[in-house]
Amino acid sequence: MATMRWTDWRGKVQTRQINPTLALEQYKGTPGHALLIIAANRHLSVADLERLLDSEDIERSRSWIQRRRWLFSDPDAINAPGTKPNVDNKAARAIAIMRDNPNLSLRQLSYLLKQHGIHRGKDWVMKNRCR
Image (cartoon, rainbow, N blue to C red):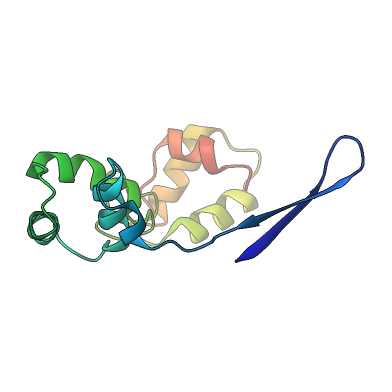
């Protein structure tokens, strides 16, 4: 058990006991039990999760598992779905080049980066220009 403390709007210190961990067995038979099993076993594939849920007598379709599995995935994982912001590991170098050339337009910066072997569009330059 841990304690959460904060000061309320009256200036009075409030405390609550919180449980930072949970036991899956406490939630057996509840609608969220399948989600908790998926959260606790992020390392398993969809097929393995399907087998595990079947062994727990929880019937969920493969598509249900696939649609909810991303909720608990690591956003920095290399094979995570979606766009990869720094797939070529050249973002730091690109930002350093942009800092050295603050007066260039977005298109000019994009062209300059391309000359340095860093392929970034003007939209990426616009989002990362002020870092």
